[in-house]
Image (cartoon, rainbow, N blue to C red):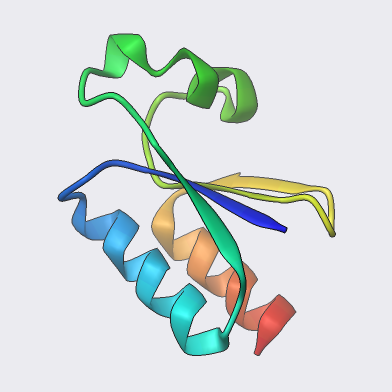
Amino acid sequence: MVTLYRLEGCPYCEVVVDRLEELGVDYESVWVEGLHSKRNEVRRLSGQRQVPVVVDDDYGVTMAESERILDYLDATYA
């Protein structure tokens, strides 16, 4: 299962959502707080508070930064 930590209205998050849907990857969205200081769960997972962050339990991958996520999704699920 893929989990996407995202923020409403975040264009980088939407690019990742679009790719997940294009590839037919089942995923769950976790909506995060707008304030960086309240994104402790994201920080605990990825070491930083920016979104998007993807957690892929099947492959043991946790990754931030939309371009890296897109490359990973293409390499893994395309």
